[in-house]
Length: 150
Image 1 (cartoon, rainbow, N blue to C red):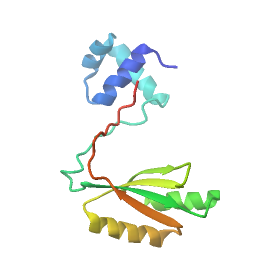
Image 2 (cartoon, rainbow, N blue to C red):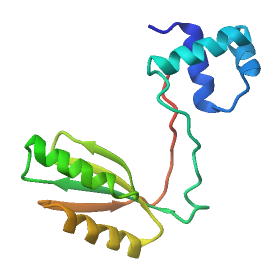
Image 3 (spheres, rainbow, N blue to C red):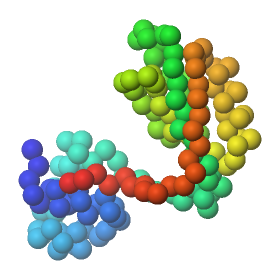
C-alpha cells in the first residue's frame, strides 16, 4: 500500500521525472533522504515501472497516428503469442491491446506519412494471418498525457 506522501511523489514524478530529490522532498513535505528511499521503494514494488523521456513526434518526423483495428478468427493462446512476437518486430507500433467487443486487437501506429503506413500495412499482413484490418487516421491530437489520475 502507498500513502499520501507516496501519491504526491508519484504525482510530481509523472509530471517531471528529472525533478531534483531536494525539490521533490520539499514539494511533498519530506526530507531528501526519506524521499529518495520512498522513490526506491516505489521502484522496487513496481509502482514506478521505469523512467523515460517523452519525445516530440512532429520534430522527429512522425506526425501521423493511425489506430488499427484487427479482427481475427484465431483465438488460441499460441496464435496470440505469435502475433505478440510479430508486433514486437514493428517499431511503428507504440501500443497494442487485446479488446472486448467487435474488434479483437487495437494497435496505435506512428509513421511519417501515408506511404509509410501503406508499407507498414503490407509488411504486417504478410507477417501473420488476419481476418480484417481497418485503419483510422487521427486528424488532430486533442489530448495526450501519460499522467495517471492520482
